[in-house]
Amino acid sequence: MSNDEQRGGYRDERGRQRPASRRAGGTKRTALRPADRRRGGDPTRKAAWEVMRAVADGAYANLELPKVLRAAGLHGRDAAFATELTYGAIRMRGLYDAVIEFAAGRPAGQIDPPVLDTLRLGAHQILGMRVPSHAAASETVALAREVNGAGASGFVNAVLRRITERTREEWVREVTAGRSREDALAVEYSHPAWVVRALRGALRSGGVNDDLQLDAALVALLEADNAAPSVSLVARPGLATVQELVDAGAEPSKLSPVGAILPGGDPADIPAVRQTRAAVQDEGSQLVALALAAAPTPVDGPQEWLDLCAGPGGKAALLAALAAAHEDVTVFVNEVSEHRTELVRRTMRAVIDAGVEVMIGTGDGRDLGAEEPDTYDRVLVDAPCTGLGALRRRPEARWRRTPGDVNELTATQTQLLGSALDAAKPGGVVAYVTCSPHVAETTEVVRSVTKGRGDVTVEDARPLFRDVAGEQLAHLGAGPTVQLWPHVHGTDAMFFALLRKK
Image 1 (cartoon, one colour):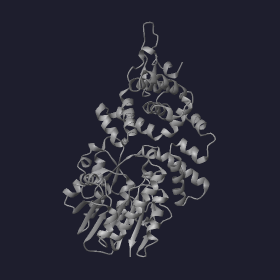
Image 2 (cartoon, one colour):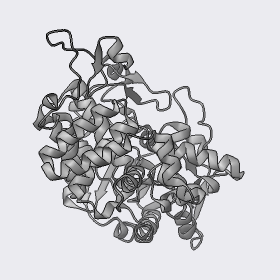
Image 3 (cartoon, one colour):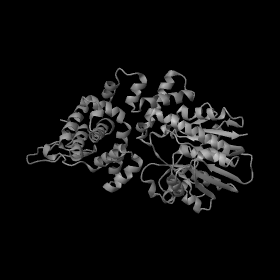
Image 4 (tube, one colour):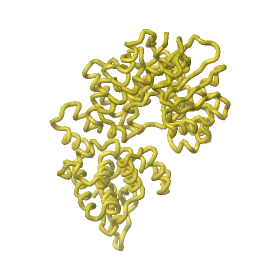
């Protein structure tokens, strides 16, 4: 008899203790009697499955999930359960697919994709959540019966029952046996192998040279990528304060002087966020904007600042709010597509309403340097990148990017940075920023652009990164560039280089 039965109850599908029902004569009714099995899927699990199918068709989980939750009327604990299930199953699908293949006796590619998503949800409940195995299996079979059909539900039942026969640790040993260290880490921590190699190279480039320390740092980074991130908020200076966010239930950031952390709840419930006086923004993104605004320039009079590729506009809005503290600063914001330009306008609504002088336009940033040479005092190049630094926030990104994307992106990054330097005034500064630590997208881009120019120097950016107490952040790399890390700083893996035009 289980401990739950001894206490007179059982664990339901959420792992909560429930009292046992009793028939005449005092016989306990188990949670798994055939007559008691759910014929339809649990709404929370069905919501997670619907998001996964939308993601398979190209949607983004962070945009699709709120819509599905609203449509299903899920709130509070139910919404939290659906969120954890969705993000976890997407993040960890590399490991789960290896387990499913072993349990099913066939490659994952030979399983019907909608059924495979159902199996991933079941595997995550069994191996990655605090859901009792019997409940995870039976509830997922009920979901399969509803969304995949009765025939598929038998297959799902057989596979999940086999998965329940081993612990997570036992499955990891099974599916990583005989692999190289990097390939084993790729499976265990559910990252494509090329991403694991790129992250190892980035850590080594940042100064981690000892093999044991490098391996430990890589594991810590992969673990951080798989951990649900906190919700970071920014109080745009002059429009909102950190204290206002704290009064609304947030906690002050220890890293960003304009940041706060929301431990729970919907950010849209905070008036300052709804009014765009504050916003959801990673602390790393806040720090790079603060660093550019703090970089010294030789001009004391009127200045012109430029965000070269601004969409969707979070950093541009913070820069514009910071610019308002200076006299005679005009902020120019550029975005290549009309759709993203409209997103920028929405993001900057409160900044513009407050009277900050902002000029928003649509154009190719690669051409702007030739069109407006020697014009801007500060230029931000928040370049399009692989996004490998934000994998914890974008669970599907690791499965969509390929090594071939890197070459295409670095060509664009190189052109954008060259254009930004052309657009900067002599004495002006350019911040080159990526949300990727991949060396090809960071230091190699900076090196390739600067080696052919005699009018540019790369300055030590580390003193510009200050925490709430005004102290320089630690572990920023060997310099002169800055690399933030999820496992070290708790931010996205933002890269920052400060270039000054002579």
